[in-house]
Length: 261
Image 1 (cartoon, helix red, strand yellow):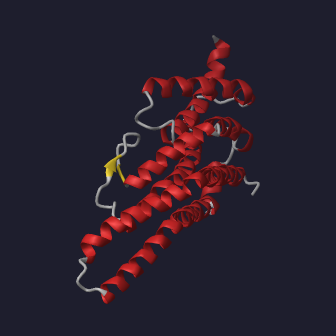
Image 2 (cartoon, rainbow, N blue to C red; image 1 turned 120 degrees about the vertical axis):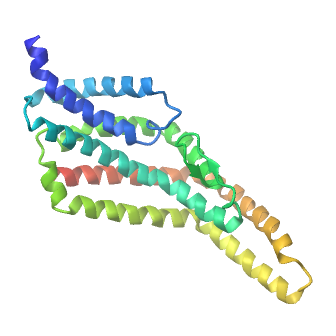
Image 3 (tube, rainbow, N blue to C red; image 1 turned 180 degrees about the vertical axis):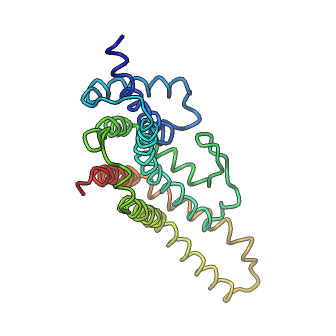
């Protein structure tokens, strides 16, 4: 019992980081995942992580323990938030395409997040999740949170690294990169819609008797869906590059928190 009480504070700190990661991380945090599974997985991963690295640091219950809990939760939430940013790329790209094609008025409720999302964005998001699981991305998530103690141990000066401003600057740059990738993903459809609008504009000048609002909407929908069908086989390599960039950014974040970047 004395050994259990000696290691219990460090074990709870590990559980705080792991559970905070699973609360925010994509795939694991969705409403369709049972809460019992989230809790059980958090405890199981925390036990494995603690047996690997948690016994090297002795932690005591005192007033500074509250700060340690907040620090551990911030590490887990920062990693999960960065992963969520890259997953949001898919929905933002779908929103860009929906606005141009004409689906923007028909947003649907995403059952995984409970929020309203664009139709094409929701479709591409489901494809992204299936490919993420097919690429064993969830295993890399588990590896990232477990290996985070190699970069950011329990006794790391996290608040000093955040106060330096490098972490905030990195998150802002990641946010900008997210919008850039989203625009690049939607660029083929946006270009096709732009050429379609130009063609319809020329048509109204040549034949003003055509009701462009009646003819233009179904034409834009058909062309947009045709372009998506042509681009669909390239989603595999596109999402693979997106996930590689996401894991690379998570590693850079850990290096910033460790002070080695």
